[in-house]
Image 1: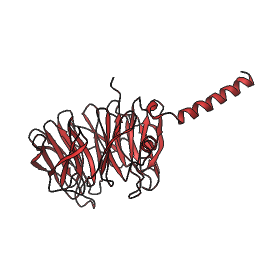
Image 2: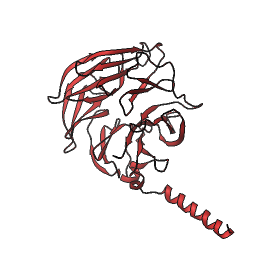
Image 3: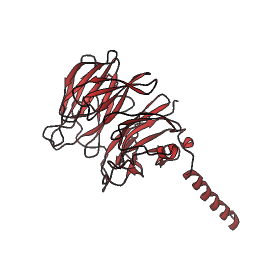
Amino acid sequence: MTKLTTIILFLTLIVSCKKNEEMPVGTFLTGDGVFIIDEGNFMGGNGSLSFYSYDSSKIYNGLFSDVNGRPLGDVPNSMEIFGDKAYIVVNNSGKIEIIKKNTLESVSTITGLISPRNIGFVNSSKAYVTSMYSDSLIIINLNDNSISGYIDMRRSSESIVVAGDKAFVANWVGGHEVMVIDNTSNEVIDSIEVGIEPESMVLDRNDMLWVLCNGGWMRENFAELDGINTSTNTIEKNLIFSAKQASPSCLRVDGTGGMLYYLESGVRKLSIASSELPSGPIIIPESGHYFYKLGINPASNDIFVTDAVDYQQNGYLMYYNADGTLVSSQLADIIPGSMCFKLTVK
């Protein structure tokens, strides 16, 4: 190789890397990846949206503001994709930002919500939104992106799972119930007593609803994992954690609906058929890291966790293979939190 050829190749690589860093949003969003909700500092209004692309093996930060020319808001909490749109629930700003999932361009903003937390889609025209500081479940009209009504819960709400003609809603802060909503009448039809502070829920392949209860903020009670039959609204499984100091969170399910994952001193995994909780984690945080939120790719079972560091500065997204091998650790924005997977239809 001549000296001139070497120089040309070097310059080509520099230009290629430059173009990759400045790649248009629509380019890297065409493939599979995971959105990361960066919460930002409380009252700082600096929440943001990141995306990890499988194609480039890179994370792209600050996407909502880059595309729409305005900040995402104060403490975005969750994001769900429904059809060709993504719905970002922004807790402290009291709104839902609706964007196109492939370009991130704003479609609409629903405002006037009280501390919204999570969204559950009932059908193509209706969704429910939970609230931390309101005793009502919010009904959203997806046709015109408006608030169409409320369901009196008489308690706050957090996690939500829609299963057939019912919606199951957890009363997290200081609570110990899962409320059952009739999706046709928009009425509370039942309540199920579970462990203290049910903070996350998933549905498995047998339509069993798994509820992770953290035992209370002060750990005054034992945490537990409850399995609810969604046909009878009764608890069929009850797994109690062995120590009050246990602090489980972020219950997730894999793409087959057969394996559960959650955070407790690392990432833990158990089969839905198991009668015992796992004895230890399959992934332990590396020195200096702390796992904040968990996500499981439903197509590959790849494991993603976020590290919020000191809850003041930029944190990290850590990507592991299904076997627990670390693939990469990359810098996200401030307090990277919950995740939402974007997968192409094969």
